[in-house]
Length: 116
Image (cartoon, rainbow, N blue to C red):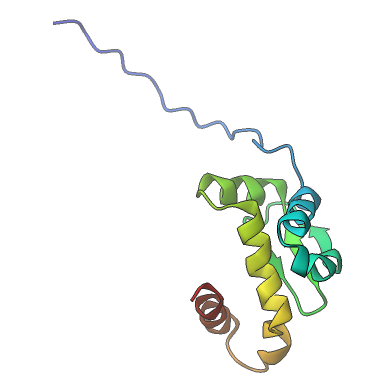
């Protein structure tokens, strides 16, 4: 029986796969969702290094990082769908309507409502 070779696990952090930034995703979403193109054009991308998701605030800023975009793609999420999801938060004024509600619980409820 041949001996098995045991190798150490690779612990290096991979380089971003996309080479894209969120502006490319916004442009793609504008083309695929022309009805929403004016609203998508109103979003201001804000680079937030190390931020591992997408998020928007009630001033129509979208927070992102290249690492976050790669992480989202690795889950199988489609860029246009992710942009549309964040846009729905803005159009439904979820940030402005949160009031004194707990942020995480409010966001989870809003996500459920958007994804329904």
